[in-house]
Image 1 (tube, rainbow, N blue to C red):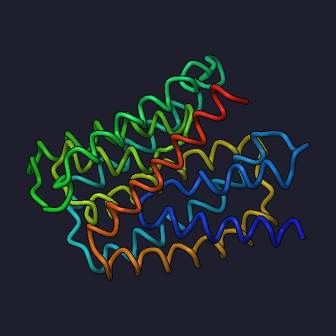
Image 2 (tube, rainbow, N blue to C red; image 1 turned 30 degrees about the vertical axis):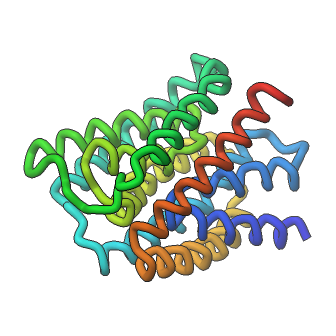
Length: 252
């Protein structure tokens, strides 16, 4: 029964994550509820062990239908991987507790900005090209990758928002690009957790199948309905993240 519940949560997480990120909003709390006495590092390892496959498949699906700037995204993915490794190491010596109380306000600012700018992310008009685009994407990858390794909640949504706001992508191209960088940061975290022995592979691999199934469905919906649909899901997911992080930081 535990595996069935975890797989159902993984499927839903893959669906949400493929559209706009934020799958951890579903899967991480579900794992903590299903396995309340398990070490948190093991639960995060299971989470990453399932999620990395969903984001990788979503990346492949988007790449078939969306024009992705690989010359900028590949170095950015490498930087996201390195950043996540650095963040994961940093959390072993510095507590990320200070971010817990700040995160709802940061997400609130992202949501407010998105709601106020109704045309934000509807048109694909990259702000940079060539080496400048690669440099901007790499800085984004390193920064949010570090955050993913150090703390984590909302990583996919931050990737999407910054691709839209800073690099000038529409929400569909931003989501497609974010998946590649999120795959790299998830992969880095998974390697670290696996090295430390914090992955239950018999759970993670079954949940990965469910996550990929959800990811395929979410990707197809995003490609079918375009940037307006992705923007709407982004607003819903960020709103839910604000509620969840506010409860965790201030009300629990």
